[in-house]
Image (cartoon, rainbow, N blue to C red; front, side, top):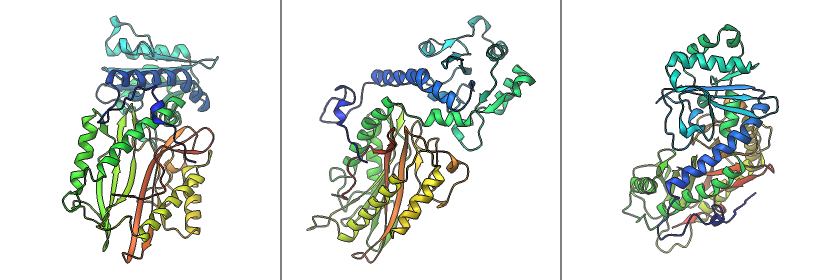
Length: 434
C-alpha cells in the first residue's frame, strides 16, 4: 500500500540541494504546467468525452469572473480570461477532439487551441454569432454547458451568458443543451501519469516545510505560541513564491484539556495538531499531523498516546482497504465506518478529492459535520487515477491523561491504476516527538 520513489529522480535533477529549500524557477514551473495541459487536451479529454457520451463542450466566461473549469484549460501564464472568453471542444468520428478558441485571438493559446475568430470581427455581437456558427457547423447531438447541481466548479456558466448563448443558437440547439457536470468532474479530478508523479515532489515539499515548522527549530516549549507556528508556515510558503491551499491552523491538546485549543502557548507534554497545505505546479496539498512535545526526561510519548496514534493508523488502513473502483463515496464511507466500529474504534471520516483545488470535485466520503452518507456529492463514483485528502480521526482513551484524546490525521493520496492507494507522505507508523 505504501510506495515511496526517490524524490530526486522526479525532475531529472532539477530540484537541486540547497542549505534552504527551493522550488523550480518560475519559467520551468510554467513549462511543466503547459506540457501537462497539452497532454490533457490531446490524450485525456478525448477519452473523457467518450466516457461521458458528450460530443461538444463549450466553456464560456468573462474576464475576472472566470469559470473554474476555464482556469484549468488555459496556459500557465494566462492568469485571467479576456473580455468574453470561450473555449469549445468537438469530438469527431475518429475519436479525436478539436480544441477551439472561439474568442479574440491570443497567441498564448496557439499551442493548445485553434483560433477561429477574426480580429476584424472582435465586437461581442459578432462573437456570439460566430460561436453559434461553430456549433451549427459541428451539429452536435449534445452540447454540454457548465451548469451543475452538486459540483460548484462545474457550475460556472452565469445566467446572463446562458441567455446570450441560447439566443445565439436558437431553439433547436437549446434543446440539445445538457449539463457538463459529469464531464467537468472527470476532467478536474483525473490525474495523468505525469501529474501523479509530480505530486510526489509537491507533497514532499509540503511535508518538508511542515516538519521544520513543527520542530524544535521553530518551537520553543513554554514560549512559542500556536499562531507563531502558523505565521512561520505561511511566511515560508510565501518566501518560496507559492501560496497556501487554505488557511493553515495550529492547535494543541493537553492533559486535562481534551478539546483542540487554538491561540495558546505550546508546552512540554502537549499534542500539537497542524492542518497545512500549499499549491505548487498547479496542484494542491492537504495534510494533518499531530506531534508530541517531550517533557524533560521523556524519550517518547506516554504509551496511551502512542496507542491512540496507532489506532488512528489502523483506521487509515481500513479506509484504504475500502477504496474500490466503482463504489460511490457513500459506499466507501459506509463500509469503512462499519469495519472500524466492528474493530472497536470510534472513528470519524471526512475524506475529500484534491487536485486543482484543496476541496476539489469528485466523490465525497463523509463530511466532518455530517457523519452519514452525503446525498449528491457522495453518490459520485470513485475512479482510478484520482487524488484525495484521506482525512479522518479516531477517539481513544489515554489512561495517563484520564480522558479521551482525538487523533486527527490527513494525507494526500492517489488511487492509482492498479487499484491501490499510493500514500505520498512518509511512513505513518510512528508518532513524531520533538
